[in-house]
Structure formats: C-alpha cells, structure tokens
Image (cartoon, rainbow, N blue to C red; front, side, top):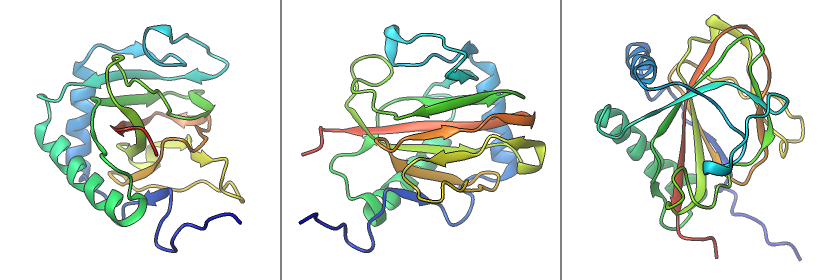
Length: 195
C-alpha cells in the first residue's frame, strides 16, 4: 500500500500575492546587476560544466549583507510555506540568492536542484527551492516554469514579485524565452538529510 500525503500537503506552493512590489523587484534587479555576472553552469560547485544544450542563462549571487530586508521577507515566507505545505524538518536559508537573467533564446532544460552540498560545498541538503519572478510578465514571452510531475504539464504563470516554492527533488525546467528578458530570483533552502 502506498502511503498518501495529507490533503493539505503539497510539493508545489505559489504565494497568493506577490511578496515584492514592482519597486522592490527593481531594487533586487539592480542589486543583481551590481554583482559579478557569470554564465550559468550545469551541475554543482567546482564540478559544474558549461552546456549550452542544457542551460543558457546569466547569473550572479546577491550577498546576504546587500539586501537584508529581502532575505527577511523570504525567510518569513519560507516558514509559512514550509509549515502549511511541506513540513520538512530543519529548513533554513543556507545559500545566497541567485539573480538570473534569461535572454531571448535562454532556457534551462529538465533538472532537479539536489545539490547535496550547496553552492560552496559545505551547506546542508537542499530541500525546498524558490523562484520569484522579478520581471513584469509583459516584458517577455516564453520562459515558463514547468514541472514534469504535473500531469498536464501546464505552466504556472506568476505575477511580478510572486514566488513559487517547490520540493527540490521535483524535475522542472524553464522553457526557452522567445522575446525579451526574463529576470528572476532563485533560492534554495537546506537542512538535515531526509529520513
């Protein structure tokens, strides 16, 4: 017999309203642009590889001391979402936020976020991932976030400043951007290994 999750529990949760205003999204974008940009790799840590058949995007990392209020909002939202949807043990912010830009033609093929050691090889197991849309949806086309486990595989549209939290072990992808630039804030939350 396969155990069933409680009816209230889920592995994908979208905030009911944006967690950041358009002005706050612009401040995050500015903070992301002030950090050193890099081409995104596939795979974690130093072993990551550039693979333009799997991923085309530019990223930068926003240090914890640059936008403390942003991190506070996200930490609060993480607590609410974990309590109401995931109920994972010991989940905390363990890695800095990743600012991502998908230009026209940018994408990220199917993958999971299960980097067991975080960005610098020392952090706990990733359990929950978050994507917050920073762009106004009218600024780009394509770039939908898709999950392979969802039967109809329909995109989950987000408003500017709205966030989606999901279990890091879910396979997901960002479809190719066909017009404009899609900007988002990506975070992972870690803890002790699953039991």
